[in-house]
Length: 431
Image (cartoon, rainbow, N blue to C red):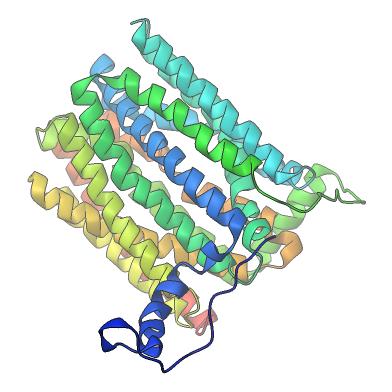
């Protein structure tokens, strides 16, 4: 693992403009802390490749939702597509985590990214040839979910392989920032592309974008993989991880917090196409603006967490995120203005990212190394369970009723967040 040292020596000599080198270094120090993980060559390759690939992924996400809604006119299908993508992750992730520890994670990621690229090209071809049907989208989402069951776990455990334990927390936050930079750029490009040439090109460009991350991973210089000598059965290793979660109050509570927020709160992202058209009466470009606004807020939250990655007040930070996110959902439920919806979604993205990144960091830094992969899998499952309520609400409610349902969910989230945040603050006051 190659790492480049940051400069630590200070000087008093003056540079151009009369500013001392010490002053320059002092000003650069916060920036160096924020992007500390980029000292590692392997992580730089991963970071740059992922930036391109995730932009394409967000373009496909927006275009896929828009296409499905245009084909069916039913919010039910939006939730159904998300549900189809999440079911394989739910069913396979626990076993996938055990299997991933038995093979080189780099090879696993190359395989999963190649699989996602193939599916993007298939969807693009179906749309280009005008053969696409709603069930095609559901089936392809399911197949993508099969790959994601392995990809998500491999990606999270690969962080330590790239940067080591020293910069792991910073890399987690930068990964969130990277995700949300793409969440800003991707939906904006998707809105433009949808309006100009249609959804097929969004899917095709997404397929091409996977090449960047695949080549980046291939170019990494990684130590030789050493397979574990002694292997228990898959079920025995899964039980060990679940037993640890059950008997560790802090980890259990963190997973519960993220589960509640994702299950009831983050469904708004799945329903954005219907919200844009039925409540705000806007078009594809308006939908792109809404997704972009949420991404800007989440990016700001991720960058804040990267800068504060060595802070000792993570309990307080988690409490702020837990309360801020549901308040934004309450405001969104009452809003019918596009500009205000953009501001509210910025706040929702900010609060959710603070909550999720802080909880992720607390879990990974308080779990033994030999259990980290098996414990982070349930955490990842908790963070991704937002589609079942989307199906329920989308099938039962139209525009105004959907708003009232979201209002009740926001109130429930606020009450849950207050109670659970107290548990974290009490059990981990200086984490």
